[in-house]
Each structure stands twice: as C-alpha cells, then as structure tokens.
Image 1 (tube, helix red, strand yellow):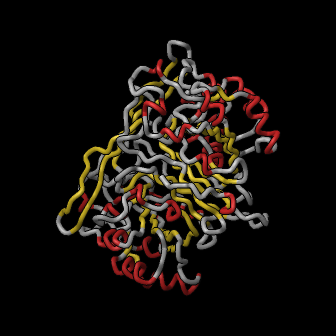
Image 2 (image 1 turned 30 degrees about the vertical axis):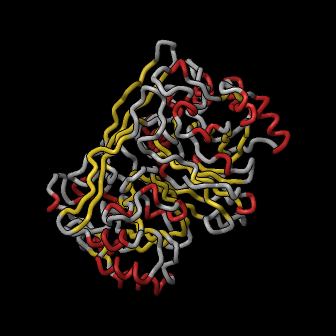
Amino acid sequence: MGILHVATVFVILSFMAPVHSVLPGNPLVIDMTHTFDENTIYWPTLRHFKMTGVLRNYTVDGTWREESDIEGAEHGGTHLDAPAHFSKNKWRSHDIPVKRLMGPAAVADVSPKTAADADYLVTAEDFQLWEEKHGKIPDGCLLFVKTGWGKFWPNKLLYLGTDTRNTSLLHFPGLHPDGARWLVQNRGMHAVGIDTASIDYGQSKKYETHQILLAHNVLAFENVANMDKLPTTGATVYALPIKIGDGSGGPVRIVGIIENTKNPVRTPRPGQGQQVIDMTYTLDDTTLYRPGRKPFRLADVFRNYTGEYYYEGSVIQTTEHGGTHMDAPVHFSKNKWKTDDIPVERLMGPAAVVDVSPKAAADADYLVTAEDFQLWEEKHGKIPDGCLLFVKTGWGKFWPDELLYLGTDTRNTSLLHFPGLHPDGARWLVQNRGMHAVGIDTASIDYGQSTVYEAHQALFGNNIPVFENVANLDQLPAVGSVVFALPMKIRGGSGGPARIVGFVNKQEYSPTHVDL
C-alpha cells in the first residue's frame, strides 16, 4: 500500500471517528449522518439524489468557482419524516418546534435479534426489557432503535434486501405496530430514529408504525448512521433537518454529543436554562437567491389518500447556495474543503456577534473593516479561537423582500446593494484570529457590489466556511451563546442548505424573539 493511500485512509478515518469539540465542556461529537451522493439509498420507487454541476472552473477574472444544483426525494439518505408524511393535518417540516429536534438519547439495541431475522419487528416487550436495565425511557428524549443494519450501508442489496424497484422484495427490520402503539400510549419521547430505511419493516404494506407515531406528532428519523458509537444512555442528540416550507420531511444532519467526564463544565442542553433560537429561514417560494440561481422548488408533490392510508411526499429541487446556507471553502478556492470534508466539530461552538447595523443602516454598501473587529474586541475581549463569528448588519429585517434585501428584484447583478466584509477585514481575521466559521445576515459575505469576491477568497483560502442569510442574529448576545450550524452533508459539494440554531442563557434572551 502506497504512502499516499495510507495517508488518505488516515484522513478519512479521522473524520469518521468521534472527536472533541470546542463546545463548553469539550465533549465528544459523533456525526450520525450518511453522506448524500450517487450511492445514497432511497426507497426504490423514489427519485434518487442528483447533483448537477453548474460551474467548476476558473471564471474570466481568474477566480475559481464551484457550485451545483441538487435534487432528490425528501425521504432518502439520513432524513426526517415529518408527521404530515403519513398523517393528514399534522406537523409539516417547518411546523416542528426546534426544541423537539434535540434532547437526551436513549438507544435500544435489538441487533442480536435482527441478526437472526431480517424481518424482525421490535415489540413493546423489547422496550420493557430495555427499561428493566436502564430505567424508564425519558420524556422528551430521542429514542433510537439500533438494528445493526448500518453495517450494510451503502450496499443496496444487503441494506434493503433488493437492488431493484420491486418493493415486495424489501427485507429489513422495523417497529411492530403494537410496539409503536405502546410507546405513544405510555412514553413521552419526541422522536424515534432507526438505522434502516424505514421505521416500518421492509415487508410492511400499510405502514402502520408510521401512522401511529406520526399521528401523535412523534417524529421519525430514518437511515441514521453511527448508532453504534452512542452509549445506551447519557448522550444528547441534535437532529437538524433542512427547513422546508410545507415539507413532509427532508435531509437531516444528526450529531451526538457525549459529555467529557474529565471536564466539569456541561455542554448546553435545551431545557437547562437555555433558550433555543432558530437562525434559519424557511425554504419555500419566497426564499431569496442571488439573481440567476435556480430557486427552491418542491416538485412532484403528492398529498392524498392512497389505499388505506394518507401520504405526503415531494422532490426537492434547489441550488446549494440560497436561503440560509453554507459556503464550503471549495466554492471559491480550488482544492480546499468540500462540504463533506469539513469536520462536524468545526460547525458548532461559542458564538461571537459583531454588530455593525448602525453603520450599515447609513450605507447599504458598507464594508466591515478590521477596525470594526478591533473596536468590538475593546468591549468584549478577543474573538475566541474556535468560535463561529457572526456579522450582524441588520439586513435580516428586510427578508424576504427581494428589492430591499438584495437591492434589486431583477436579474441585473450590477444593481445588488447590501453590506459585506471588506477584503482587508477578512484578511485581518484569518491572519490574526482563529474562528472556525464566519456568518452574516446578508446574501453574501462579500458586499453586493463586489465582482471578484475577495472576502470569500481570503476566508476560503484558509478553510474557513461561511454561512449566509443567517436569521435572527438580533436574538444573540455579543458573547455567551453557543451555535450549531449544520449543513446538508453533500459529497463533493460546494455548500448546501444549513440549519442553524443558537443556545442563549435565558436571562440574556430578548423577549422580542419570534420563531421563523
């Protein structure tokens, strides 16, 4: 085996392994998400994931550029089933309170039984036996059922039981309807996750388990990865789906947090003196994009009864760069990190919020300078290493008015007007400070009139991801909050839709906050 191959394997494995983060308490972080690519497993009859390269080359001004369009059914890969997926008039994706997407994890391991029976149905007795050993399934938890099926991913034949479109050949474990019924009647979990393609077993025809859970607004997460790395109890899981307006589900980024027992500081958890802020705009037909980019669309929408049950499903069509999203470094810097290269622990950490809104209010083309950051530090101390640095221009108040937010409601990019970082400000940051990411409440980290995108280039050349169109920045204090900014996990991507949440001590939380 060559040296280069060994090095490549080492790097890949280092990204897969649990790692310590810069979050308070320095916990271990586990990415429980399969990557979206051409091998992603979907239900056989659904449209699979597709990434269409729009640009991957040098532009006429000599700037490297990568960006793509993406599409695929809502229900494939590691994803959320919103209650509306199988239950009429229940929560759609954007309706789900963000606090229900996170909580203590309970892991019920039935893998010895499924190893002997691919069609195994998890019963109420399985959960009762689990409780005899580990105590009652906690209220507000995310309950995960570990079948061991994750070891087969992405081999479609082994994982699904068939590599054809014939759904009668599907074989994998799931929850018995009586097991699901016992859970909703006796326990108060917020969600149930599983490491198979469906919460119902492969041979199900009526999807009764879906119907039972979703009718009670209990969320389902399917194709969950790395469940074997979670302890039975004691971890906290954050399952943050892309925020689709009127969606029946969608791609989700799931991370598990395991406390560092050697550190007395605790990682923020919802309900422990923390207000949770959703810093994400909903993806719908009002979502703003840079002129000329493909807008968000739900295609092939189905919402009706089919046989004995109600069903909703759609196909997502969008670009990587629109709405609340991440720019991966490769977007403007060749051979730098792509979306799936970015270690997940770099996407969460303490937040620093630099408020330049008074200056931006007086000048729509305001450029944030190194002096702005230095003045902020005189008041609040040095920008922390490992932080997520957010620049608050106040532009969020204009969303989703295209004319006010972008400066134009036409395709003429020369008419764009909104604030951004001065290239020298971006260069000062990368030369003098150690933040892990930079976010802004405008359409771009470069100001609207930029044509060479020097702020992008300065940050991306140093592998610093950028988050754009960040919502609710006015609800975060200058220091003291923690932010998770989790993008859709796209192999080879130049960015993608992101779900961003902030955790703020309740005594610092503004009562004017309204969830989007």
